[in-house]
Each structure stands twice: as structure tokens, then as C-alpha cells.
Image 1 (cartoon, helix red, strand yellow):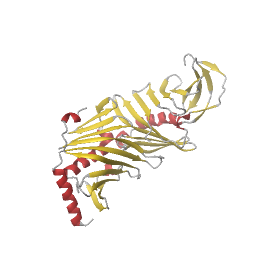
Image 2 (cartoon, chains in turn red, purple):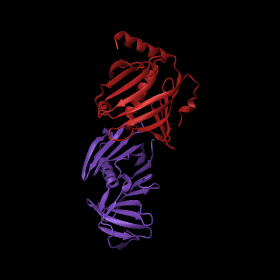
Image 3 (cartoon, helix red, strand yellow):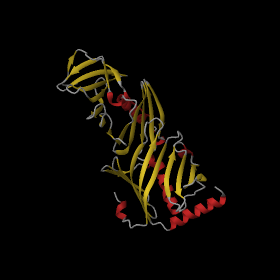
Image 4 (spheres, each protein chain N blue to C red):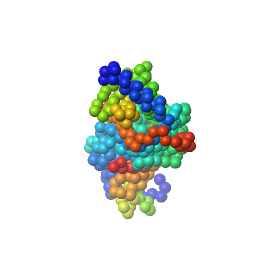
Length: 186
Length: 186
């Protein structure tokens, strides 16, 4: 993408984010590992409320949810409730920050990432390569796909150094519906 | 062991069928409780060669926590999350999953109880006792012991042939349980 196109794309995402107070969406997650016959497919829904509350809820094939709220991570693993260990989910926390920031429009953090931009027929693609050495040991890059029409995130891909990856595809996205804070309690 | 009477050895070799099909991805929802600290995740076991198994544990979001490879008696730690990369953790997990994926084992002694044929075999400087239910011939339990003490117990629940729907691993000498529930993603 040219410099002008990148600027325009960033503006579009910024504009979309300023007017977004809540998001609900379905998602399907594909975990790809080269040695498996099939990707591991899990699915559920996502709720976001500005400025920074997120709930990820898997409903198939098991019940599992995580709520990101300020500095808290609340998990409910099929009825077993606990605070998630940040150590084992640091990458996801980063990903989550990325998604929140993409909604808020300040995701393009050149201090933390080397970012490159691409345009296809249907989507803009931004590729984030972390500058953090510890993180780069288990994550080679993040890829975010955006709708060309409205600048909404439609797909997230986390690629490991081994080239195994986790892909999350969003669908049925609803903006600015009323979302009670009670959604974000465990 | 109590309640066991020695018999002559009728099977020189017994087979753990639960991870024996190279065409299957064995995928489990895992709950690990270690000294009151709780981790959820997904455990993937796959037979990748005649005598080799891959054992990978990821978070629900797909990020890898560990990745082990067993080739005969050779163990390779492909990956371990830095925060958990401690000798005692790696050794314990390595040994547990070694018992789980050992497919063919040589019988040293044989016993019977009311419900089970019990096969004893040497495993390094310990012993494994395989409890095979007499009527349906299914492997229900493996007990790992030192010369004098029970160390690890693995319970299998198998309703469909050769797939362990539930696996429960319990340590007697440390506060560690691993609870596995099989799921199909198709």
C-alpha cells in the first residue's frame, strides 16, 4: 500500500472506532498445527464495551469464558471459576490489547511493532511483528484483516515461529447495541 | 498391591489402545490443578510414527504451553513456556505422558483381582500396573509405583472402542491432578 493509502486506511479505522461503544460478534477459531489431520475448531461469541471490557466466550465444543476487565482476567472453565494466570496467556492479552486498540483506533503502535500494510480485493491486511524478544519466541507475527467497506476487524491470525497458527474469524458483528456491565461479570 | 493374587503370565505383551491410531487426532479439554493453581487448556496427542507420539498442550486460545516428542525411549522437549520451564515441572509432565503414550509394554508379572487382570511391568526404576477389566477387556487404570509406594494413578473411561473419553491423572506424592475430556471438533 502507498503512504497515502495507509493514511486513509488508518483514518477509516480511527473514525470507525470513535463511534463504537459496544461490539458483539460470533467467532470461529481454527488452531492449525502441521502435524494434525484437521485444524482444531472451536467457536463462540465476543462482547466488547468501551473503553476496555472484553468477554470471550467459547460455547462449542465446550463452555469456557474469559473476561478482560481493567487488570483482571476472570475465567470460567465449564463452571470452574478462577483468575487466569497471566504467564500462560500473555500472548492472548497482547492480542486482546490489539483488538481493543484496533477498535479504539490506536493500534498502530510503531514503538512495539514493525507494521506492514497490504490491500487485497476484499480486505486490508496489517501485519504486526513484535519488537519484544521474549514475545517473539512464541509469536512470529499477528495479522489483522479489515473490511474495506467499514474498516472493521474481520479476522485475526497469530502465527508462531514454527508456522503453526491460530486464526479467529468474526461474523454477525453488531455495533453499539446496549450491553449491560453484568455481561462482564463471572 | 492389596487384593491381588499372582497367576501365570498369559500375555507377554499388552497394548494401550487409546493413542494407537496414527490417523486420529486425539484432542482433549484439559484441566490441570497444581498445588491449588488452576490451568485450563487443550491437550493434543498424536501418534506420529511407529513408535512416536507428539504431546502438545495449548491454552484455549491456541498459544502453546508445551510441545513434547516421544520416540521410543528418546524424549525431546520441542517447546516449554519460559515461565513453566522448571526441571520438576518438565520431569513430572514428561513421565506422566510417557506412561500415557507407551503403547506396547512387556509384562513381567500377572495378577488377578475380582474385576481385573493386572499386568506388572518395569518402567525405569519404577513399576507400572495395568488394570484390564476382565469381561470387556478394556484398560481402565494404570498405577505407577516405586518399590514401596504408589506415585501416579491414571484412570480411563472408554465407552466407544479404543477412545478414552475421560482420563484422570492423580499424583499421590504431590498435589497435582490432570483431568482430560475428549472432544471432537467436526
